[in-house]
Image (cartoon, rainbow, N blue to C red; front, side, top):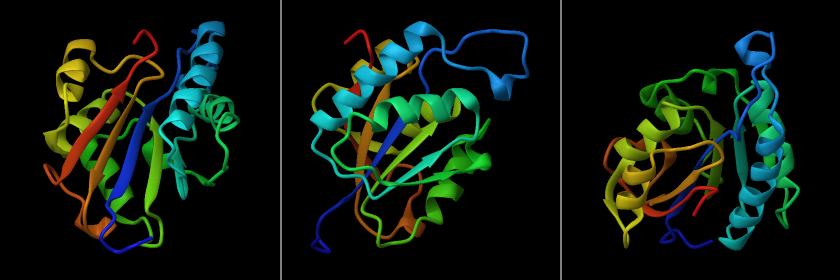
Length: 172
């Protein structure tokens, strides 16, 4: 890849979880979540992005979401299950992304709200088409994802440096 090509980040919220009597971290996907995760995977495949790295929360529902979504992709990226993504604030998520090796051009982060939505909002200094309006109107429901791009090394990722290029939610 050329140095001039922007880096891309997909912020992907886990799919719909069930509410059994287990600790929050161990909640599995609901039936609808399993369906939506696969559909989201197909939509991620439609972007044509080849991910170099996936950063996934260690929570059961995010791991299950990623397992179902990645099955739809042509290329399976290296996946790191990162406990710091669970219940992370946008600032904590930026800190995790700042540690990504510069060899990785395209990264997907599979996490939770409100952190994922907050991060998309904070990073997006600009937006293409109606992506921001759709994201703000819909919020960030389960299995939704935002695609952002920015220039520079991962350690330079900070508020307002990215462009929100796309947003998708299961009911779109």
